[in-house]
Length: 168
Image (cartoon, rainbow, N blue to C red):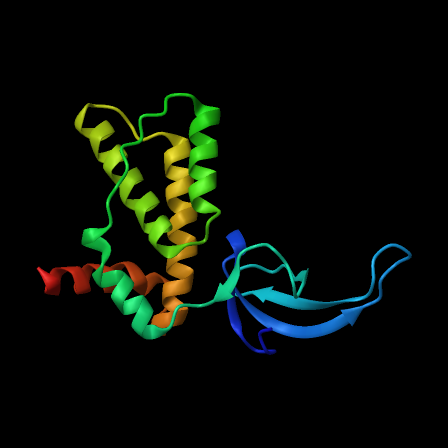
């Protein structure tokens, strides 16, 4: 169990702070259970989930893990996205996005950038669905990196560029 004040990544909600841990009464069929009250850092909602939830809930990366992740960006393989059906493409993007795994988010971001670059090189505009999931993945990844690296959210892309430039 994570203590009050902990910063956690909760599914696609991104970084949240544990505001409270409290028992909620059960009903006739369900016993009482412990619940977290989570406050996402970047939205106004409040989330109440069971402490024993099966949804992805993990601590925010440490500074060292975040620095290593950024240094590993060049080695993360992209996937050629050749899905032409919009519903299938949406499911593919959503499955990758909902993992909340930083490496998978980076793979998704790099793959969409590569797909968009190919479209532009061939005289086409990037798709709206591609742009939407690129923004969602970047928002989620940058939200965690800014907390782990103690940066402002808008500083994360330039930090990444600087680290990668100094490594090459």
